[in-house]
Image (cartoon, rainbow, N blue to C red; front, top):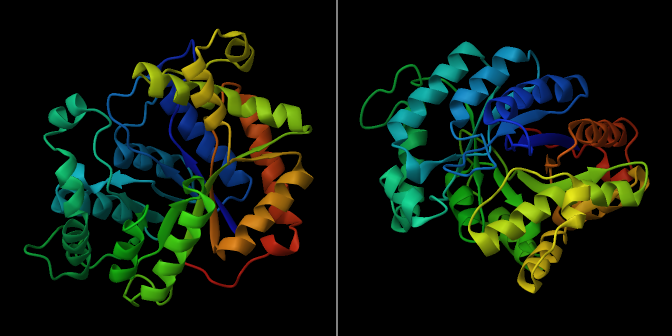
Length: 336
């Protein structure tokens, strides 16, 4: 079983956006040494606590700073961009770093109306994801409406980040599916089953390939692992109640915060559904997740205030692959 990393370039309280971006590049070098399979960066716009707004630019910096790990996006939000421009950007990346580039694509639009207007799009643009995906893939096959250079004739690895009906879009185009475990057990399994049942082989994948994304926090004690989740949970609660998404606060500051009943409810909700605990506990939970979903790969995302504690979590997680539980052993299915 492959383990990969999604980093959203989260800003830590008391630090700058520039520091967050440099931390992402340094983090990529560190997880490469730990043996992780991929390192992906995300796209967020006008979010105070997230520095990652230009994923292809950041992916280029990450790829230049590493040498072996696959690098990609989780993802480029296709409603925000013209397919030709996306093809050209990934063509440049694949030309500079051949055989290492993943093209993860999503259908989300801006978080608020103001952001969507600034991007020149609205919610309805998300409905055009399927046709835009088809056009984008056509540029790499060489049968798009124009020739996209240097993408023409190159082979990148496309992925669709999906929820609900998006899984069927991935199946129809024959590309690997990335789906969040946070969706809820029944919805997750229904989407994965539908994807596998309707998958159409393509030049991108001969058979279904499922990447399950989840938050994982590992520490020597369950209490320490739980504390790693507090900063992101508080930021999520703030986003739901105050309309912002602030930098990550220290766990002690989160625990000392005076929360309204509504904030407390969102905060506790944001702490649910994650994989966290000691290495033994996490191995058991990840094994169960892989067995339930039949996942070919797990994409791990973790955001916390203490950078050293974050690295420790990923180091401990890497040891589970070196000496995995039975359910974590390699499945045999592989994509580039």
